[in-house]
Amino acid sequence: MLRETLASSSSAVDNHPPAEDAWVQTYHRLLPQWRSLPISHQPIIPVSVSRVNQVDAQRLDVEMSAMLKEQLVKVFSLMKPGMLFQYEPELDAFLEFLIWRFSIWVDKPTPGNALMNLRYRDERAVEMRGKVRTGLEGPGLTVAQKLWYCIATVGGQYIWARLQSFSAFRRWGDSEQTPLARRAWTLIQQIEGIFKAASFANLVIFLYSGRYRTLIERALQARLVYGSPHMNRAVSFEYMNRQLVWNEFSEMLLLLLPLLNSSSIKNFLRPFSKDKSSSSGGDETVCPICLLSPTVPFLALPCQHRYIPSTATTAFEHGVLQLHLSGAPGAMSQLLPCNGMVVQ
Image 1 (spheres, rainbow, N blue to C red):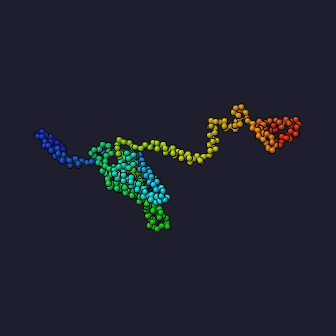
Image 2 (cartoon, one colour):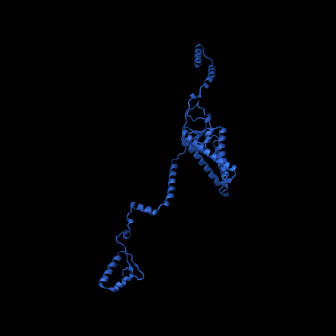
Image 3 (cartoon, rainbow, N blue to C red):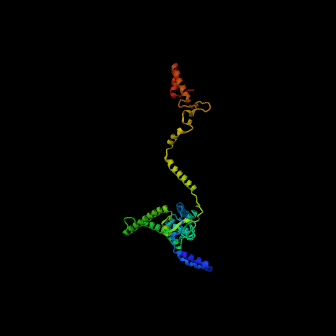
């Protein structure tokens, strides 16, 4: 049919020039045929988004919420202790609502997504034909998607936290409760187990495909893509990783050092010590100048004799032997009460 049209137009050109609006008529005549072409023949550009960036963005959002919560808690530091703990779910929901209101609702990325160069895109409305250059084109989330995201994240987390605290306070799981309370507690546990299993399955699929890191994003088909194709992430975790390693290492040493025996460690390391002169006990009394043993005399009681250690003991033994051989019992009787002391 296209050939016939081109042939007729070429014959018309040969006979007489076409009218001014001939191209408009040809466009309207060929437009239905163009629209009837299958979309599968249109080029599709695969988009691969780093899984590490997506997980880091989620972690940064959690840290940002924790920082805001810490600053808000300091405001109520002078109030009655324990009062703020009762309203902790409301406080968390309020902070999550503020982050959602000033980021996703106004078509802006969350703090973590902004640092990782990510944004949300409506995967259902992505037009895979036309002006496709990088594969990152596509509209943001619709109003319905934004509202459902707020209801699922902010409202869902708040309702679940309140339900768990209320059921634990009422002790629905005790055997003494009514059958209705125990049935409700069993239902809560089953719902929690199903949600954890579904989250684990979604995590496995996310690690394989790199799309939809949470169940809420998969249900809403809100995919994270790069905001700018020529910009890397704005956060480097190199120095943070080093700090974490040294912090864990220091905590391990603080935990293990008090449990070790210091004396056994010293005895084990003493052969490897460079200063081996300190290990010998006989050289401690040697004078470093004259290399002789010092003699410090002191007074002995009750005989009032002076005692000179070290070299005096040998002199005493020789003196006793000489007095005994010379037959001087008087001197010998004077030395015996001294218990080995030398008389000078």
